[in-house]
Length: 469
Image: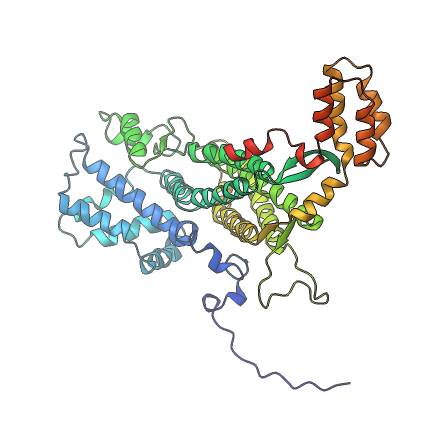
């Protein structure tokens, strides 16, 4: 047996120093592909969102005349507060985690951090006990997650979806008139065009994109069980419902007036369902393109140095579409769980949503990787007109639909049955189809149109539809 040298033990690098030690591929193999989401959905992103909500709540309280014990802040003091929230650093977030080791409560740790920053400010120090005033942790969390989802949706996911739609639209226009044999149930069917099939996907993605963009993101800030109990106990003359509504809407969110301790998460479920439908459409596209590549309808650009198979040197595998399909599938498994689980909470509150919400970024991360892989794959494609034409020329039976429909128009007997007898289970050639047409008792112009027809020319309005998308 061969003798292998003994490995010299080396200290492992810290987890933060090596993606090789990452538990999740989002922080390992794919780390660079999800950088756009990292500031939003990371622990730092969550802390940043919480700080923003706490600071804006304090500013809103200071502006309420009925809260007489809290003096209005000067513009300079308000600017200092907002600058702290907007410029929150990783070191600030690390301080929150340090405080949390004592409190064992993540939102309370945020409150204490803010109080630390206020205590030495002459104007802000008197407001210390109005930080987190009358709030339950969920008041801060639901608004924080809503802000995070809005940011991810508006700055990352929708722009990436728009890029995909634009790519597919350009391909639909470029190939609007390129005929392609359809397949229904895996069998030859009435021809279409490459562009029209891509236009179908554009139309679907546009519709779902509008639903994702338009989905409301509700938020609430109404206390421990949604009744403003503590608020009213402290300041019974303030219209807390109106105050709450104004505050939530000032954050760019939709006010949720009726809740238990938690905002019921129906809005998050709607966003997850919308993103899941988009991912499903993309999976459908990936599988179709994969099949068309297999048929030879598309060629893939060869990248220098890239290996398709470890043993078969000729292969150029559709890896980008397979990678996209896999990542969209992971994302959808999570989105489906979020949408089914998050709207359910025992009585006025249980904590099962807390750990689940922390995984939102994982789902969006895999969807983002799916988008990028799909775009990369589409960029490598070029249509193969010769292969498309060859398949069409071998499928003259598809003209049976046109012939029997013209026969119906002109009252010929049993047109469907005649064409069924001619074509079903039989090989049909151009000559046999034309011989059949020649024998029909049709007006001369109708007969000539059928005789001039070819499978590649039998595409209806496909070209026009593809160009209009």
